Structures are given as structure tokens and as C-alpha cells.
Amino acid sequence: MCNALINGFAVRCANALQSVPPNLCEWDVDVAYVDSEILRAELQDIRRLGYAVDLGGYLPGVNAVGAPIRDQTHKVVASLGIVGPASRLKEEKLTFCTIHVQEAAAEMSRSLGWNRR
Image: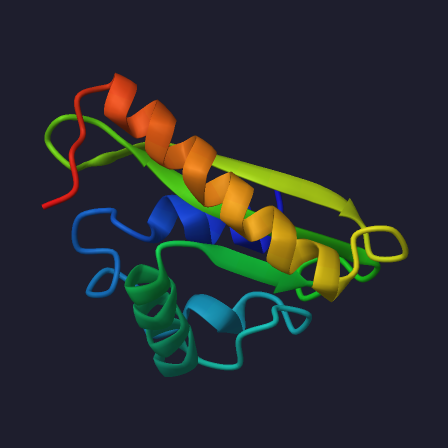
């Protein structure tokens, strides 16, 4: 699963920012995040924006965008995203896709009883 989808799901998870273990990134030297403080800062940005974009950070040559799907209690119950090869899903196209992913995730969320506060 791509970072954008993972981060899209994490965007509103309860205590997501507090539950990042300090040694999260020590287990794999290829992890894109060097330390948990960088991860926390990125999760805060994602939460503020309401979506996540990954430009080959998780898997080289693969780009993605993801957004959370919420229920009536505002909890994230799923994540919706688009993943594709970087050669075809370039950054400019991701900008266009981001709008549609957010709209589709919001529509699905509304069907589950979510409404923007």
C-alpha cells in the first residue's frame, strides 16, 4: 500500500500524532522518514490539507494521492486513492486527481453520515 493511502487513512485517526513511536523508523533504513518528528510534522500537514500525496517516496517510480473516508462520528473508516506509475501519473496530473479524490471521498463520507463541521 502506498504512503498516500496510509497517510490518507491516518489523517483523522484518533491519537495518530501521539501514537507515533519514537523508534518507528529504526527498523528499516529505506523508510522515507528519518525520524518520528518528521513523520509527525508530515501527518499534521496531511491532516490540515485533508489528503496525502506520495511522489515515489514509498515505492520509487510510483505516485499516489489518498484521502480519508469518514463516518457519522467523524472517524476515518477507509481511505480512497489513486496509484499509478510516475511516468504516467506525473505531479501535474496528481494535482488534478487530488481534487477528484477529495470530492469522491467526501461524497462517500456523506453517504456514511459524515458532515463537515
